Amino acid sequence: ACECVAWFDIDVYTIHLVKESNSAVINVGGYDEMAIDIFYEAIVEFFDELPKMTPEKLHEELTQENATSDYCTWYLRVLTATFLKSDPTRFLPYLEDGYMDIAAYCQTQIEPMGKECTMVSVLALAEAFQVRVGIEYLDGRPFEDKLSRHEFGPEESPTKLSLLYRPGHYDILYAK
Image (tube, rainbow, N blue to C red; front, side, top):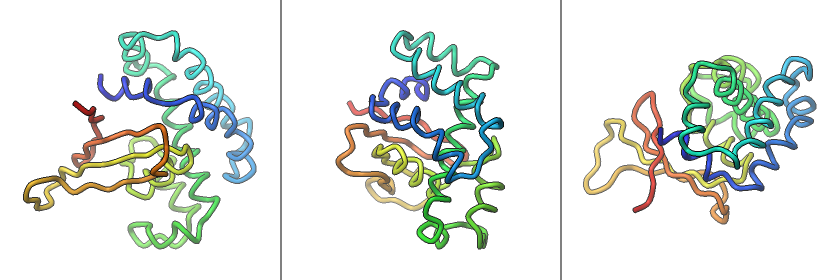
């Protein structure tokens, strides 16, 4: 449930960026308009309906086995890949597993559903939407009095998300 509530933390500017992203996905990302249209429409419709949803309705919408959650997730994966493709020389040194091509990395590691989100993916998505994301890592690294933390995205962003990473899963963290 906590993952769903984070959708309420998305600001109007971020929603505007998603709604205006279709031309970049086609022109920069190289995706076919006919192929992505249904996913784009699903996320735009979701954001249009978001202000009317209760947290319970949002949870139901995003956890039911229906197209909304998967379509929104896949479109966000496409946006992440598009951002990576927009500046390949910047991101190429940070790719894992010896990838030498951003497009190949996106095709095998970003676009497929079920693939774990890497740090370079979080960085790309945070910067693409001008969102500040802090991740606390609970992944077996040694720590003394606090967890290892990485910050992504612009410091001045009005939207700030905190996540807890456990291998294979992210949870939303809320301030006291």
